[in-house]
Amino acid sequence: MRVNEHGFVLKNVLILLLVLSSIAFSFAHYYQQNLKILQQSLLLEKQKAAELILYSYFMAHLHTNESSVIESTSTQITYTISATDNHSNLDSRICFDSCYGWRLEYDFENQRMISNEYTP
Image (cartoon, rainbow, N blue to C red; front, top):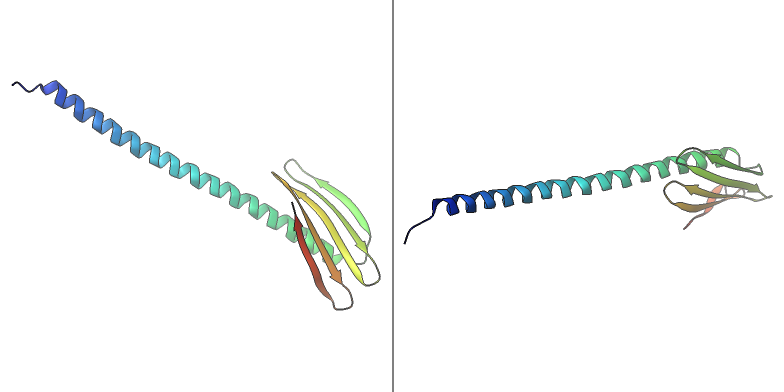
């Protein structure tokens, strides 16, 4: 029986290509997942920043009645502040990639937030 040297080399080259393609696929999958996590983190940070700005504005204007729409290229915030004798309400709709509602209710008598609700 005679051993074919070309078959041995071809087999090793194919195994090497399989290993290298497997490593390349693993790195690509890792970076894709990492990029997805970073994009979601960025979106969450944007939402938190928008909520902080809206909350600060609401707390500074508790006794007013107003509505407004704020739009930019990637963001839309619609809010309404309504005040009564003993409560102030903030109804807002915040949109980035998707939209959600945020509702706050402040009690003047106890000087504290009594409601903080999120709606899809």
